[in-house]
Length: 405
Image 1 (cartoon, rainbow, N blue to C red):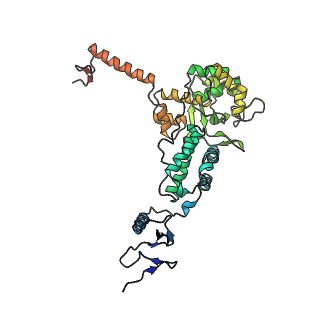
Image 2: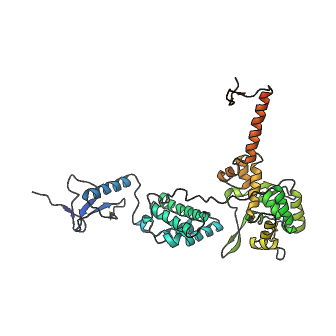
Image 3: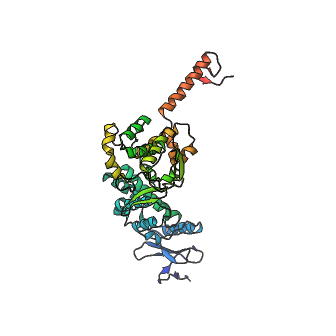
């Protein structure tokens, strides 16, 4: 006598749970002829496969994969993956600890401007690498710069990394577009010492030391404008960076920690620049230890970049110097280049720059043409010493240098 099939919770026959058949989940054939798979999750609740299958065997293979994922701890709840990217990303920004106000503002702007319009309504579980690739291509086609597109891509990748690694909503991050995270910014100009002094000399007297400290102290705009009298040695020999000003939309100028943990630092100022710092302290800074080093002329309030640019006629001045498009941050860039050429170790360069990631320091220490010329000159000296009989390496018959024996 033929044994009847067991029934599922909805009364339909369970054709896969006969004695001796699979022990995980069940499959059934629908009136359409396709097959549906159901399985118990780690919480004991039964769930259906997101799609139906053409054959019973295909449905069973799918159940085997799900069972393996549960056993290995790799299973993710498909119901949780139905959350919309826009909602999840907004919550992600709100819950990130320790973000600086400027960073939070940037993340929200990137979400609002470049991510949510095209991807905000997509469920996390339906995001694919092809979807991400097309989103990136659409941004570039719409005229968004490669640099800004890379920033948006990196933010999206970070959000989805959390969905994979912490919240276990996704099994893998769909942000796998090769090269999409690279900005490839245009090479910034490298100022010479003479150009920095020339630029400082073209500034109003009260801002001359500002330019020199930014360059010779490798200081960011927010760091140098937040300096107080108590942060500077009386003889101008050092400055202590412990805070920075940040412009936040809707809040104006706010004070916070430096850009990175390593941003809190003491920077030694070159002796040749110290007299300018002392002169500025004596002429423009109030005796109060908390008095700001650099302020506006009329109100004595913190210096804001638009006011500085207007008061100094920055755009016009740098254009006359043949440096059109020069940014204030290029002063810090120049100081970092000079420091890297002084034989500074990576660790010491990181400390001076205020970076806790060595990648930036290594960029500044990359080989330069003048360093390569010095190496070539030294190799020529070795050859000349050998030819004069002063030892060194012996050239073989082909002229190649080989170790002396």
